[in-house]
Image 1 (cartoon, rainbow, N blue to C red):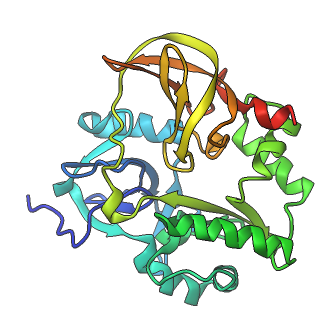
Image 2: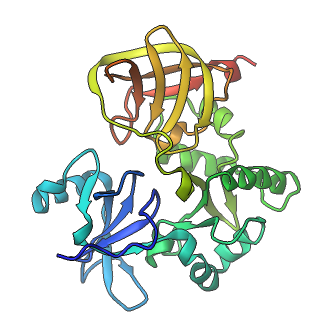
Length: 313
């Protein structure tokens, strides 16, 4: 079969459509041979989502997605769904579709117009990218590379100037219930309030998601190690420059562990360089070093990252 023709590499937060019409969220950066994704929507005549051409889909939750892949495409089953490029018929890119999305959705247009960012440096992912949003859909903004940090600063300024309201307690509690973290509500909000990677606008929740630019795709190769047990550690963060990436990466000063990685968005940007963290997760052996992994399951039970420096202020 002919490989999908790619003008640009498939990258994190793109969506791809396979030959059977399944729609998948790209979840990794290493997509040269097989796209690493998670199934999100399946064609279904009785589905609750409808795209512009009238075709109906149903949304697939995380556990169901892996069960469906295991049944229908077991050869794709891995830590994510690894789809051969010759099985992909279309790639949806947030930055390429942003003009259409802003034209069709006033809420997205109004929110995006509050940011001053170069064209093609940002877009919308999630259901809006797929044309399968409904009235309850969140807005998943994605900003690429260094422009993300500019967007983060602009969001903080917009909140300070009253252009975007501060998150209400009701919205914070909604997010907390959705994330189901292993930390208290008060500790959750204390950490989240300084990140400026999410917000509430015109009654709609939105995320400000990071993705590397095309020139940064292989900056830090992420590979799976050998799990050797669980641990809870305290350590000083020495580098948090990829703390908002997926996974979030924290280099630490610790006698045994070199990095803490979080595969759950809950702990993105959880700590700054120089801060002392407490982290619980699964230790992986990577040969010459060990990593502590947070988010080894969907809800990361028993796994967390806390900035002790922040909480002790």
